[in-house]
Amino acid sequence: MPDYYETLGVSRDADKEEIKRAYRRLARKYHPDVNKEQGAEERFKEINRAYEILSEPEMKARYDRFGEAGVSSGAGAGAGYADFGDMGFADIFESFFSGFAGGMGQQTGRRRGGPTRGDDLRLDLKLEFREAVFGGEKEIRIPHLENCNTCNGTGAKPGTRPRTCSTCSGSGQVRRATRTPFGSFTQVSVCPTCNGEGQVIEDKCETCGGAGRKQETKKLKITIPPGVDNGTRLRVSKEGDAGLRGGPPGDLYVYLFVEEDAEFQRDGINVLSDLKISYLQAILGCRLQVNTVDGPVELKIPPGTQPNTVLTLENNGVPKLGNPVSRGDHLITIQIDIPTRITAEERELLEKLAKIKGDRTGKGGLEDFLGGLFRG
Image (cartoon, rainbow, N blue to C red; front, side, top):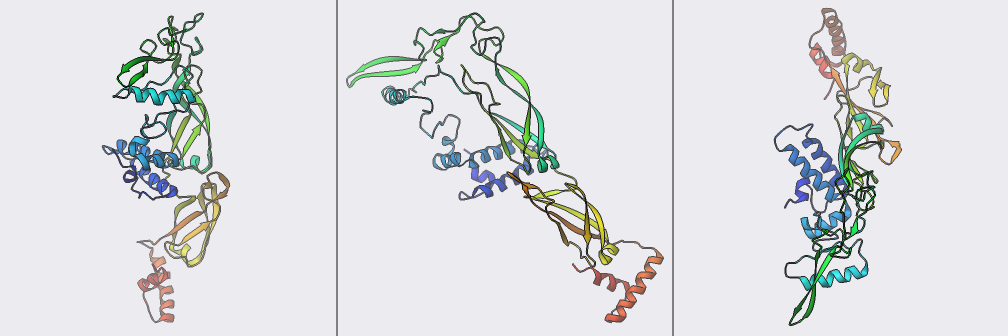
């Protein structure tokens, strides 16, 4: 079984933010659209699974206590425990004692004749850099199970209706009494006639074949909040598969992945970019139009700016997720373009300037002059 902490490369006492950062870093590295190496897609799936478990406090607690058994699909409320979410006290009591009585490798059947919630669905959605920054509406298409309109989800042909199973009288379970030297015990199992549904459809709906649901592709508009990032999960209520026998639908979970931008990078809620200027602009200072996620903005370059100086445009970064009024900054790293070739006229002027500087400092020469201008 995989160790989800090892999968994300974090310690067992890592907090939620540390787990989130590790996930984002690995998701960027192994996303199938970015990494074409063999095995990258499987690794990406493992990373997603690990984050799903460790990012949810309840799931993480169950995993820490029971391991994979505590979070597998059949684990219910915990490893080795039955799911009693929709059972009454009498059913729970009966489940315990009939399970004990039927022990010996037999698994107690659970009543399935009532309404059942539909399955949750997952969709991976790619966003452009600015879409993640500012959010907005996105139209998506999802294949899911919808209630059959012909039979209204009953599975029976119009004009007919399912009948109560005569074998189990609608309970979905059959019981068998066994006498032993220690007393009488009752063994409970799923009804073989109705397969635990509690009812039998004699005339099946021709549209859905008696399933009560059919596969449909649905168009849906979802709202992306400002400030989302790689791995952000959105829950769209009641847009999963339709439930059975009048049960509620499941939910749709949308996992977001942000495409890289040619000009900007992101560090939390800050935006990073580089700006290349000439050595004369660096020496004399200037004002330049620079691109930001909000559009062109004027940036002041102070005289004597050195290479790798970082200039800040406040409040031009990413809105904080859940509080879009609060924004990060845009951090611009200055790169100075020193030419490898200059004209004879430019060289003459620079040598005159170098001589003046040399006279003042006791040094001379164009190389000493240029070297002194840009330190580091």
